[in-house]
Amino acid sequence: HFCPQISASSIKRWLKYHLDNREYAVNDVVAGIHEYFNVMLGTQLLYKFERPQYADMLTEHPNLTMAQLYGAPHLLRLFVRIGAMLAYTPLDEKGITLLLNFLHDFLKYLVKNSAALFSANDYEVAPPEYHRKAV
View 1: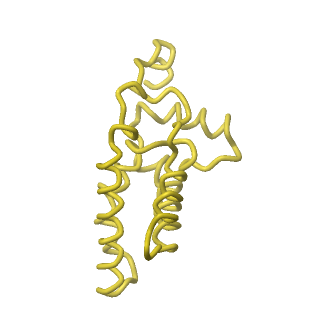
View 2 (view 1 turned 135 degrees about the vertical axis):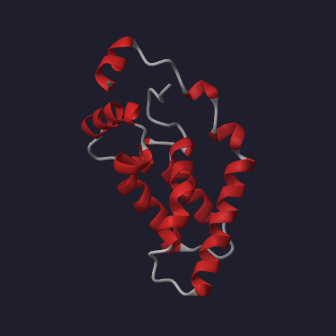
């Protein structure tokens, strides 16, 4: 299955909501999540089957970032890989602790709002022509 359209609840919008509604906003973390997602999506977060759709999205929406187009299911894939990425960060122990607390809070936000962010209705069976293109 694949997501046939631009996500109605884009990652960029969630990140902005989360940033705007924090007592201690961590601007660099939000910007980092946004940037990591945009950079990693095409090469590391998508399944092979999803890559033709990604190529189409790049062509059809050249002025939008991937965080504006993709939603929560794809963002979770980034969080799966974030631990390995932290090994290469120049943050000290206090910085990593702050980052992990923020990420934990953000994941709690995703869980709390999961009914709105993760819906089976966001998926449809890919048509045969897409299957031919994806293979």
